Image (cartoon, rainbow, N blue to C red; front, side):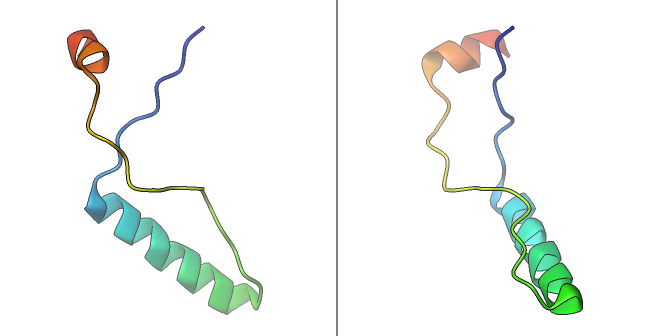
Length: 50
């Protein structure tokens, strides 16, 4: 089974960062919900699947 993760928009990344910051403040420990980075544009192969 092949898994292709969804592309995160800047808005989604910002929301996740806010949630991480809030939960880190509440727990007193650094929390990272997900590992994310800037994502390259979809390849032509990925676009064909959509």
